Length: 172
Image 1: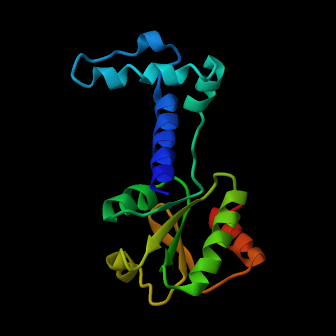
Image 2: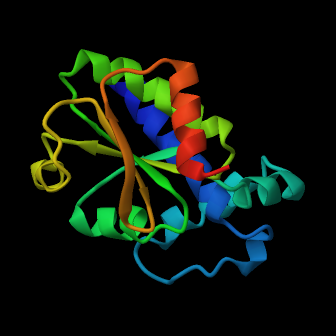
């Protein structure tokens, strides 16, 4: 079992390295150090992909529908200073209704095709944010635009209610 985990990690790292490499191996600068022998094997990993495939791997945009808030600075940068309206989902790992609402919210936000973002805040990790925004029960969803709270709801909503909530927040 351990060898499968090691293989999976090596394969994942190899694929990430391929995405970051330039399309021609001649442009890779090899440092002269004691590790140079292990670095010389990197260009050989490029050979199993055609240049066109390598190009598409490197330039594929990875836009997430939602993101987890890491700390107060991250919240300020990605939520308060956001150009888009942001849904802030205050949840907890132990909360059953949160586990039901989370995927529904992500699906509803994905339908909006980039017109709204979604931030996830774990109240156990970020108690200060929960207190600051008056979260007394989970799940609580707060809609923010330009750093101001626009709307909020507590509890589970069905898909139609989530869609109408998002439509109101976006301001169609």
